[in-house]
Amino acid sequence: MNKPRFSVIMPLYNKVPYIQKALESVVSQTYRDFEIIIVDDGSTDCSLSVVQGYVRGLLDLDFRLHVLSQKNAGVAAARNRGVAESSGEFLCFLDADDWWEPEFLEEMDRLIAEYPDAGIYASNYIYYKPGKTHVALDLLRGYVNYPKAYLHGEMPVWTGATCMPRKVFDEMGGFLEGIKLGEDFLLWAKTSLHYKVAFCENPLAYYNNDVPVHMRATRNLHAPQSNMLFSLSPLESEIQRNVGNDASGEDWKRLLDKLRVGGLLEYWLNEEYHNAAAAELKKVDWDRQSKKNLRMYKMPICVLKANRKIMQIGSCCKQKLIRLLNFK
Image (tube, rainbow, N blue to C red; front, side, top):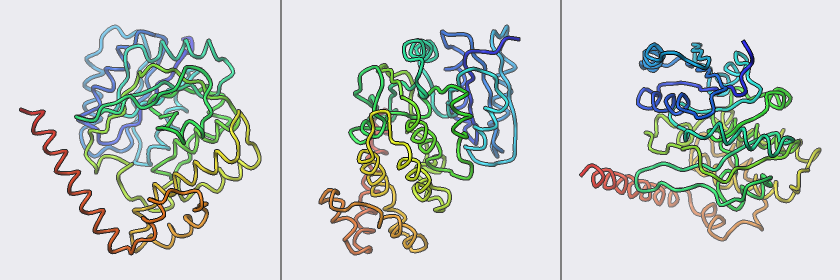
């Protein structure tokens, strides 16, 4: 059998309400030269059974679909396993609670033809949440300066809207296993130091934010060793050695500072992790931070915790009201 153009890697862990929609969005692609590799990462619900039932119902497949199972090892390990079991020239990654427009792979193929020397291909995407759905980026088609684009908007490379040459993935070493939050950022950032990033302006993927907090890595307080914010030193060394592709060391410094300031607050407020967060925050150039950020980190922790709690309660009430109005 000839190797497919694209391998679609889908890690799966306890996503029963979403997995079928994600799969259907791949199966319905207008571009047909692809394979799907699903890696069940030790799900404890019936996600695997849902997938197996869906697969049995598919007739006359014109693509390869392979379902793997493993003990829970985290999303990075699941994606790496999927890549190892795949054979496509280009790799795409779709989580089990997100989905694509039917033209996603077709547009990726077109982007590759236009920009053959890129190491990452990414499309615009849509943040999906009832009452808050919006297109993520306002960027033109072509090569983008990764850190500068990130500084002035949302993530210019989001995993569910990304395609990568296999040879580049292998060269970069894949996803860093053991990291539960930001393992994808570390790979995209490292790759953008060595290769150009090609961007498609059309929003062709959906980033599902309508998922309960306990099912989302981005809203959970992981131990520091599992959060990329505490593992940026190797990336910083890489930046010092190889700043290129129109990005500057200053762009990268500002981006990493932005991520630390924005992402370490919950650790700063946590008694167990406060010192670890404080050590990372010492690396921030505070002279370039906004007055709001400066005030926030100078507040007494008890006051800051109270303010955060009030904001969380308000947000929760707002979301319940939106759901109620949508239901009616």
